[in-house]
Length: 155
Image (cartoon, rainbow, N blue to C red; front, side, top):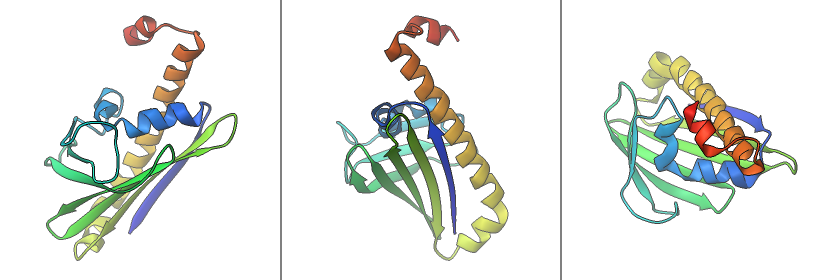
């Protein structure tokens, strides 16, 4: 079972990748994240892990199982009878980029998860895509000098 959302973001791929790969900053702008605490230190890489707390869910350990620098990472979380896989892909389109988010659910509980939470999973991906785009455009505006970081933080 899988759900995917792709958004074109009018910001450089490098800017979007910096945001996507800095998982500990996600609670600052993603409404679907309450806390992300890295287990290891340094840049995100193959084998990196983080404890992720999302609304209405217990904290879960997510571990990076595939990593392509500046392009994509895949991470997994194992729960009772399912494995959840999150896929993050940033594709450079020259003047802008494409940001793809995918959630896969496998295991004996996957069908139940689809039936009971499938609509929510898709809504979460759409919400996260929009939040990544907004945040990337704000970061781009700061980089371009259109606004200051202080103005942006004031809201």
